[in-house]
Length: 76
Figure 1 (cartoon, rainbow, N blue to C red):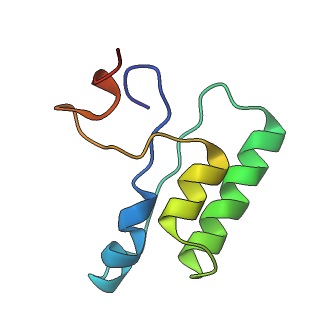
Figure 2 (cartoon, rainbow, N blue to C red):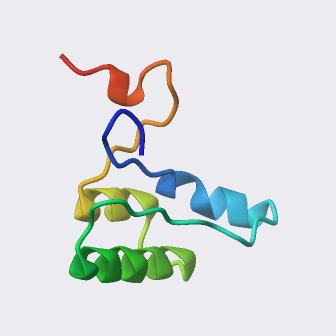
């Protein structure tokens, strides 16, 4: 969450796994139980290589530009 908008680094997960990262964290604030279940299922698919990071953020409608120099601050 940044600037009140959910964001994801899903596009980097496969690279991070190749580098040896084995633990990831999901954070939820105001999502319904159904939204949480859906997100967890999507991230499980991502970690198993069944979907790409791009597919995940499109499906969950998340911001995928990370960082504070652009990302969610670049809203008109």
